[in-house]
Length: 102
Image (cartoon, rainbow, N blue to C red; front, side, top):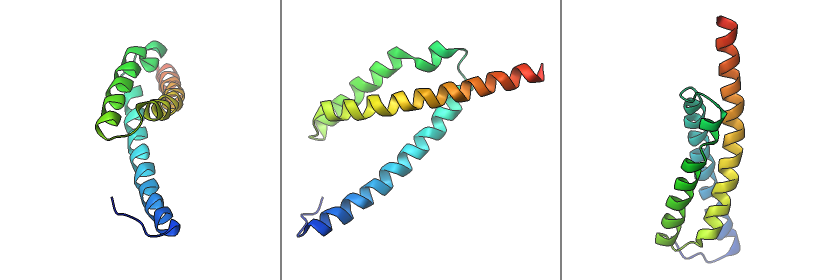
């Protein structure tokens, strides 16, 4: 990380990071979409044990990267909740398509 000499420079660097973050979230969403194909029901989509495992992992990573783990947890819980809703919609669409084909 560079030491910035102005607020504008800080903002430019934050904007660059935002570009990367959005790209990574987009990539994550594609994997979420794929995951829906492998899950049998809504409980598997919601996967509470998996959610808690992810939260534990990212809290640990936050500590290693000198970021407040509670901030990372809140961000991830929000993101995961949004992706669960998205995946439930994907799962319902896949299920409907299969039913129509049979």
